[in-house]
Image 1 (tube, rainbow, N blue to C red):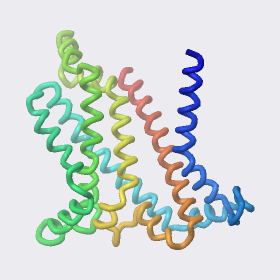
Image 2 (image 1 turned 180 degrees about the vertical axis):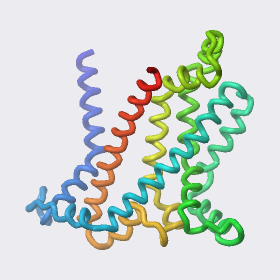
Image 3 (image 1 turned 120 degrees about the vertical axis):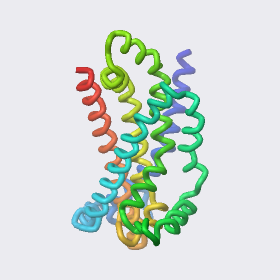
Length: 265
């Protein structure tokens, strides 16, 4: 039994090392000053981080990515949370139709979706091509599968129908039961859905570049434009990107825990 556990630990450690090796090498290259024929960098420097930190374009691109992703995720949550709840609890027969609708982004490649949106909204009374509105709409559609599946799994695991019936039998209204019983218990699932959706959108490049690449510069577009300048800058951007995603994930997780406690109070 002990040998089996040691074997599993060794196997998991080797797997983690294999998965983290590209990120580790990228991190070394981001801090490397001179690295040619040696196993480790010959000199170390923070010059690449300084260049990016002093670049106003990077800060502007970072802000663009953040607010576009945040607005899209919040819009999706405001629409999908009550929709999934109502369909799951009150109209389960409609669940197949809702599921079939939200999984459509999986079947449509990003390039095809971008071309279709450009054709549809490039002229006429609905001409919003090249603006943030069309990108937010595209982002909203792109994260529908992630948001739907996370919310639905949370409600099914919780057995929301039974809890709602019990709360109503004790005198709570439907809104009060949802706010005080259902929402606090599905908050972990809501947080995970938001984190996953935000991470997917923050790394989105195809839709962003084709829809608003010439008007709005996001982190991914900024990185793509600077890839040809220096491999050190590209590595630095990649490390900053992963660090930022980690910070945002930890922050949203703490916010979700705080909201859960606050709603229970």
